[in-house]
Length: 225
Image (cartoon, rainbow, N blue to C red):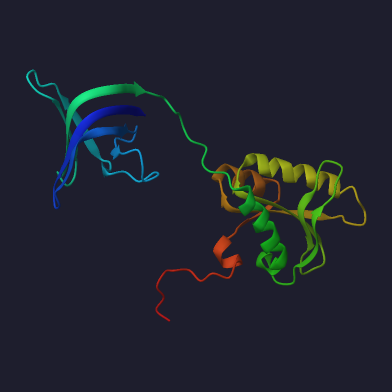
C-alpha cells in the first residue's frame, strides 16, 4: 500500500465529471490498483476514487505541477490529480489479511443451533451446550433421531484445526460408556475444502450453516412464489 499526502486538485472525467479544488489530501494507492482520495474527515469515505482494474501514470512537468492520471482499463474513465506539492510518500507491504474475526457471531451461532437443533436432522435433541471434558468444552452435545450421541464443533470459518479439535473430543467422549458411540458434526458458515476432506475421511459429517436462516431472517433474493 502506498500513502501519499499531497497538495493537489482532482478531476474525475467520465460519464460524470467532478472537481476537487487544490488542497492537502491523502492519496491511497492499494496493491489491487485502486486509488482513492481522502480528506481529514468523513471517517473512511473517500472524496473520490477509482476502482480496479485501472492504471496509474505519473508525469513530471518541468515548469508546473506534476500530473497523475488514473485510467480505468474497461470504461476509459479517468481520475486526474494535479500535484502541487508532495509532503509525504511511503509504501508498506501489509501482506495477506486474515479477515475479520467475529467471536460474538460464533457464540451466537452456538446459541441459535442449540435452539434449532433439528437443523442437523429430523429427530435431533439437545443434551447441553458447552459439554465439559478434560480438554475443554464441546460446543454442543446432542442425540440424533436414533438416540446416538453426537458432538458438534462450531466455527464461523471451518478449517483443518477445527476438525483436529473435534477429533480429540470424539476420542475422549468415546471412552465414556454412557455416551459411546459418539459421532461428530463439524458445523460452520463456511468450510474450507481441505477441512471437508479431512472430516469426511474421519467419519465426521459437515454442515454449512446459514446464520440469517437460523435467526429467522428471510433471504432478500426474489422468489417466483
